[in-house]
Amino acid sequence: MKSLNSLLALIIVSTLFIGCSNSSEKNNATLQTPGITKKDWGEFDGKKVYLFTLENDNGTMVTISNYGGTVTSFVTPDKNGKKSSIIIGFDSLQSYLQHPPYFGALIGRYGNRIGDAKFTLDGTTYKLAANDGKNHLHGGLKGFDKVVWDASIPNDSVPSLTLKYLSKDGEEGYPGNLNVTVQYTLTDDDGLKIEYSAVTDKATPVNLTNHSYFNLTGDVSNTILNHTLMIDADNYTPVDTSLIPTGEIRSVKGTPFDFTSPKMIGRDIDSVKGGYDQNWVLNKKDTSLQKVAELSDSISGRSLDVYTTQPGLQFYTGNFLDGTFINRGGKPITQHSALCLEAQHFPDSPNQPNFPSTILKPGEVYHAVTVYKVKLK
Ligand code: GLA
Image (tube, rainbow, N blue to C red; front, side, top):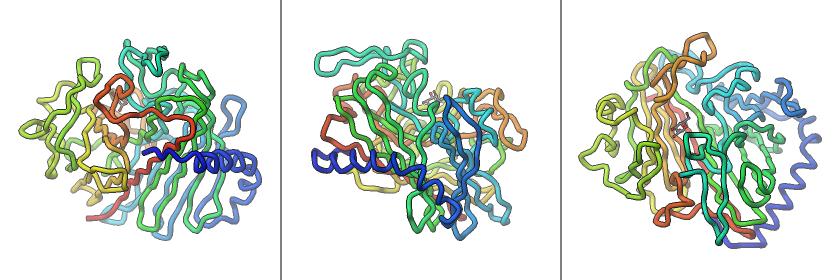
């Protein structure tokens, strides 16, 4: 994940700053950039919020806001040519300011939970916000999902959007100034590629992910329990009652967590208290970009391949969705009406010595890529 190349870090830091200073210049060029449009979407924290639409030659469209780096829709045709979004979301910034549970958002500085909202690093104990019972979840009270990112449009032949955010030393209790860049790209073959990089000036845990909720039918009144899922993982990390990993890496064999062959999500879900909300330990052995999961649905004929460089995948069946939020189009988002496949490092890694390290040190570069690629079967 991290290279110990300080020269590379220096280049990235310089690019981050040059990128920030150029952003308004680039923004003015948006109309000339093929496949991407930008519209005003309001204001938050005294900063302008935009909605960007990325479109490729197939007519596949992704909309992304610089508020929370949120993917608000991913529109593709179904087997009958009818277009709809396979990601749940809203059409107005106002709805996102009501704090839906991380719909489509970028998550950081640490995606998923940190037990007892604290960790010790190099002899210092850092106290974080306990925003999930006694635990810390998704970066705290105001994580990367609730801030306005600097947006610019790179000079690229494919539609893409660059988002930058400086998370200051001490923000949400974390050490170090963390300079984060996320690049979203819509590929020619209908992949939403998310590339994360970050550098820091003090050692800090970092675990970045995206929290899109998928329903491949494009209609939240169809449960995702009828979707079929394959996860290329022979093991998972069991959790305690507050969803903190016990530290064990356990085989999925003979358990409801076995998705090594495609399986209907609803088949075994009743034997998992509360529904699926665990981290799968991906079989891939290195940090190359590899296919790790495939989701499919017979109603729409769509399927979604997930590729990642990350070691883990949090599969969450929308267990806490309770109808409070209404999807675009007017239907309530209820339990199991959408699911998440969050590519990431394992939860609570800063407190789990046998999990791969999530500590980024000065001079290192955090780098991760995840691609959600939709196709018709
Ligand atoms: C993650 C967690 C879930 C839940 C959702 C947000 O996916 O794993 O337990 O907190 O975010 O509601």
